[in-house]
Length: 211
Image 1 (cartoon, rainbow, N blue to C red):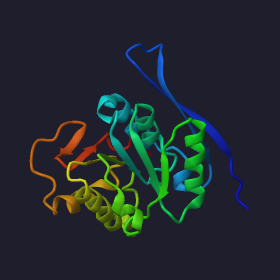
Image 2 (cartoon, helix red, strand yellow):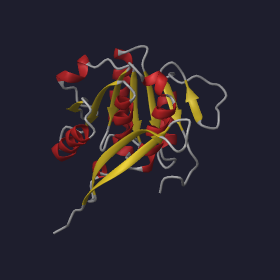
Image 3 (spheres, one colour):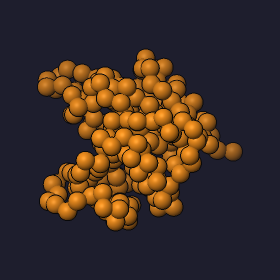
Image 4 (cartoon, rainbow, N blue to C red):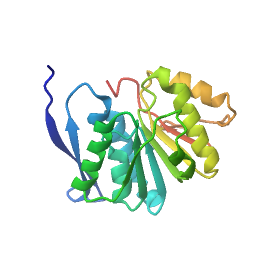
């Protein structure tokens, strides 16, 4: 029988003065073989992006896909966004942990089950300004369902943007699929923003950063 260890990790995001903590988020992690119950490096990167662009997130409607421990969404809520945290509806232990994390941080986020590629009634009412996804490209067998879900959400909210951090192990196939839909225009790509359009912003970091 596998033993589990529950810990609370603290993530600090700093303002202009390094000695001053501007935002602190506590996350309940359960160290077992369950993807959604501990903080992945890609989640930390995306949370830092949210913090660095906090003026953009303030007052926005934010939906995090595959949120798991929800660090990016929690930071968005801390900076004044209206946040919906979602994860696989068939994983109640992950959804319960998300609710506990919201209570721990005294944040009023909406937690809901959303399984990619499954068209339950709640998804039709979702109209976020910003869609977040940290390392949601880890499983190539889920690409089609993820692609369908994100595409639907973007069609439902024409001014929305999808922001994701990814591990280079998985992104190329997904990007080719996305580009084939003509949603990503040709153009120069910067060192951090690999592709941008009205619909899609993808953040990259060097191969091997997440291991």
